[in-house]
Image 1 (cartoon, helix red, strand yellow):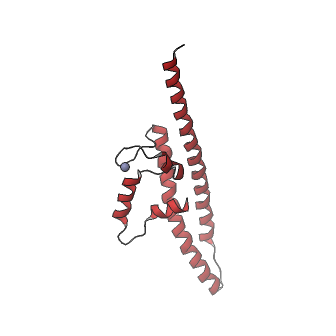
Image 2 (cartoon, rainbow, N blue to C red):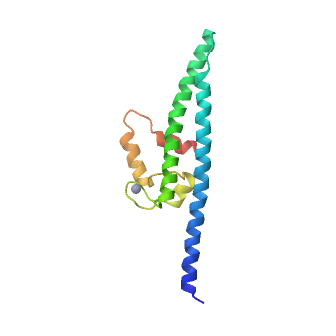
Image 3 (cartoon, rainbow, N blue to C red):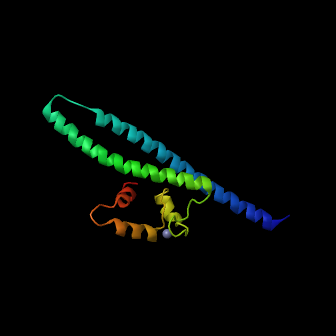
Length: 140
Ligand SMILES: [Zn+2]
């Protein structure tokens, strides 16, 4: 009987299980986004001889392009999170290297920053442009 070693082993297993859970979430999100981005390509290709249709399509294309930008950014973040999972830095803020709260990761599995650094980054970006990250978090 070596209770100390057993305890440690159990803790390590638990950590691995959590990472696998996030990996699953991230991989599914990556697949969803990749598929959505492919669909947007189809929308953007639509053309019509009818002028009203053309205007309608132009509006849809415009909206689709904006969504596509957002989804591209999100896809990059999801892939970056998967890379962090692979190299063992997942769950640490990319800015201050503090642990990101489990609650935050449960809501936004691809979050690259802790809430403090994210809020600071959002404040920096606020001038003129809407905060993409905020939009993403609400959409998630
Ligand atoms: Zn941080």
